[in-house]
Image 1 (cartoon, rainbow, N blue to C red):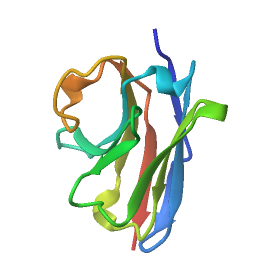
Image 2: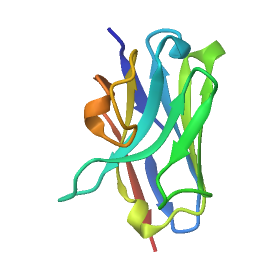
Image 3: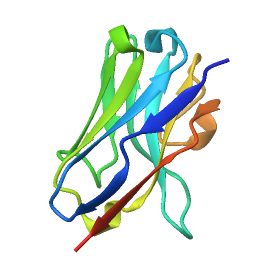
Image 4: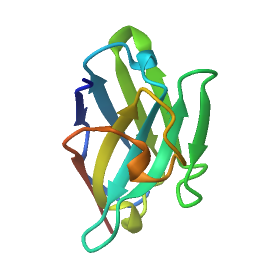
Amino acid sequence: QVQLVESGGGSVQAGGSLRLSCAASGNIYSNVVMGWFRQAPGKEREGVAVLYTTGGTTYYAASVKGRFTISGDNANNTLYLQMNSLKLEDTAMYYCAADRAYRGSWYLPASFGYWGQGTQVTVSS
């Protein structure tokens, strides 16, 4: 069982930055894959960024590439999402996700078996 707890969300003006944290119950590198998803009201949950712990490969959604950075800190069992140059359309509930096996495409929620409760990010003009 993997427990994930997100923090770091909040309200920020467009162009600002936030760093989300996801505290895992154990060694984050015991998970094959860890990622961040987001869900805006009335929209489907979408993949934002992923970290494959073996090798450190990362992938990003086109909408955030160049602005967001995913990283892992094994010493603190924490996954991060650094978000810069935030836009209004980044407003959403952000979720941390993990799995101990490869189950499919990283951007699909069904590929992850463990989820945090989410942290809200609101970007205003």
